Image 1 (cartoon, rainbow, N blue to C red):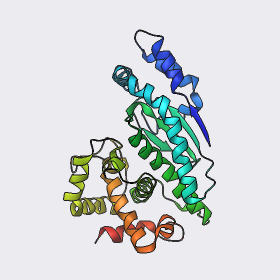
Image 2: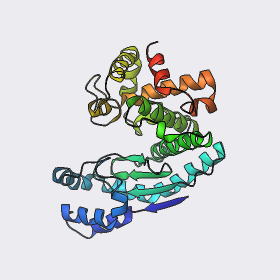
Image 3: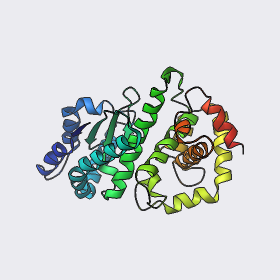
Length: 283
C-alpha cells in the first residue's frame, strides 16, 4: 500500500498568499502533473470558469481540507487493512490524496484498477463519512480483483454503458456497507449527513425509477443519461442526482440474496450482466 498525500503542498501555497489566484492553482496542478492527468478532463473540466469558481470556494473549505489532510491517511490505511482481512486479496493499492477544482471527489482509474484518487475539497471531514467513501473506492478495487482472480476478460466490458456503471457502483456501495456497517443508510450514498431526503425519494418512487432507467438503458446510452443517473449534474427526472447508485445497490443486494456474495461480485465473469439487469428492472 502506498499513500501519496499531495494536499500539504496546496496548503503551503494557500497560506503563503493573501488571496489564492488561478495562476497559483495552475502552478499546483503543474507541480503534480502526473496526478492531474488522471483528473482533467475526465473527472473535472479544466476551464477558466471552473478554476475561478474553485478559487472562490477554497476559503470556505480550507479548514475541512486541513482536517482531511491530517486524518485521511490513517483512515485509508485502516480501510485497506479491513478489506485485506475480509477478502484475503493482495490488492497492493496506491492512494493519491489531492485538492481538485470541485469535480469528482473520488475515483479509481480504469487503466490501473488499483489506483485510487481522492479530491478532498468536496468531502466531509467527519471520520465516518471519510471511512465510507474510502471503503467505496476500495470496494471498486476489490470488485475488480475478485473478477480478475476468476479469469475476467476485461476487453469484454462495455465501460461506457450505464448498465455496467449500475453494477460496479452497486457492488462498491454493497462492499462499503459490509466494511463500515451500522451507519444511517444515506451516508453510503452521499458520504455526509444530508442524504435522507434523497434516499426517501428513491424508496417512494422505486418502481418509477426502475422504469425510467430501463427506458434509458434500452436505448442508446450517452453522456446525458450518464449525468442523469451517475453524476452530480443529474437529477432532472426526480429532483435528486445519482439515483443509479441506489438502484445498483438494490440490484447487487438482489444478486447476493440469490447467488451468494462471491458469485454476485464475480457475476460479470461468464454471464451477461447487462441482460440480467434489464430482466431485473422489468420486475
